[in-house]
Image (tube, rainbow over all chains, first blue to last red; front, side, top):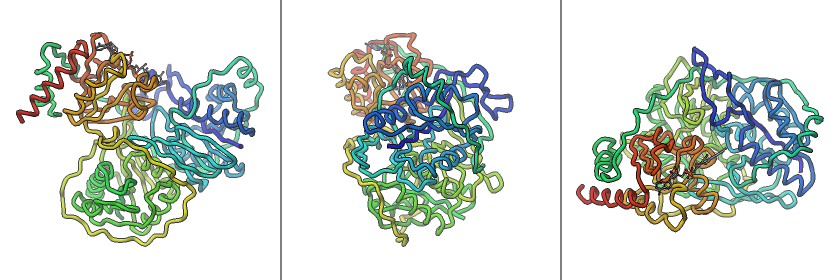
Length: 246
Length: 319
Ligand SMILES: Cc1cc2nc3c(=O)[nH]c(=O)nc-3n(C[C@H](O)[C@H](O)[C@H](O)COP(=O)(O)OP(=O)(O)OC[C@H]3O[C@@H](n4cnc5c(N)ncnc54)[C@H](O)[C@@H]3O)c2cc1C
């Protein structure tokens, strides 16, 4: 099994989000960046489990600058064998997808793994794009996967339930909760990750058709109207007459 | 130029999310000075009615209803070429998310997902808005491809009757054989799936145990709401996984979200803070959820929830 895991970096959910004065860019000052949790817990760990079970190797790829190397090192510490960094800011989803596809094209991966979405933009865009660029089937929001020979059986989240599909490798999959459990890197992994090389490749194809032109802060909440527990009728009446939602 | 809406019908009929996508397409087409076409694939009961909510033409391509993103994307791409689409609209649903990126990649198009605004036209580009960073900000995207793609957030654009039913025309596009075999589909029946639900009653660890969920279900039933839960509750299997909302679970935007015995951690809020009205019931006045709420009750949920059910029942009886 030759597996590629695409890892992204995002601000931690608890990070305070600020922008530059023009509100065109995230102010990264003081923001804690982490490996996107779904890439880490679900995609990377399941890829490593499959390698342990079936043999083969796990490569991680990240589109980003040298400042993001700690995130790549963490993936190596968790158990990835090889790492590739495309040396450029990930300026948009399509730009990022093109870099990943350009690298993957010559490599004949059996499975290209993603987390279901990133926790900052939640678009779930890059995995679908990469699958199209590689002309491969794409299974989104996979929650369970078993592989026998070259046939994978995958359960995926759909609205209000699950769908189970079967397909042969190669394919692209995005992983959601259930696919695997988080692994904490151990000392040996951390030591080894320091000696594994990160292959740095230049960005290739360029494209620029989605641009964030402005960020905005949400309006402040008006504040919560408190109602006494002895006066539930009032709550119901407010929901009916004031909020007009029931 | 046109706006092409993929109106999904994976279960064989057109659902609310597809109608919302058409409602969006209709408004977007107006803003862009063009027409809105709807595309259905396979069996699609209710397709003709998409005319009523703004599709000037409704097309159907014969293919299997079993979803295969690669096959569907190829059909939609061919339709987009034939119909001269400059904007392709999807619901932000499991199939919409699987397709939108494929179409954008194929056409080098701009893409914005889970958008919450109609496009504003800026020269030959459009600008749309979405919620980012767990609801801590909005981002405005300028899309500048020859064919741009959006997925639209659920419960945000309401279909309205603006015309009459359309005649469904067959579009002759041949579907490739797919590589994905759908073995089984298991979805809840009889309730609105969570991402589409207009009202949601959600409960957390404050419930103490799964045996106590009767009061939550009763409240949901009188409201016609769908039930949801916090992550720890799904983790210990008090409730099914598909009910789990939040950052790691389903993200929702209902009109009304009632949170019962949920503390309101940031990871929970990330999936629910786009709700229009939030009601919080918690016995801890310091629970962080109150900061994100519109209406709050400090009290014991085992006392408050049944009373609320009763009060709503009374209200419904009067109206
Ligand atoms: C990376 C990450 C991702 C996460 N993703 C999610 C996610 O997607 N969704 C999610 O929900 N969580 C998520 N979490 C977990 C989250 O941080 C919280 O731990 C979780 O939401 C708490 O669930 P809860 O509110 O049900 O339980 P608690 O935090 O235990 O809260 C229970 C609440 O019930 C109240 N209560 C108790 N008894 C009563 C009573 N008798 N009457 C009224 N109120 C009562 C208490 O005052 C308390 O506020 C995530 C955490 C991490 C680290």
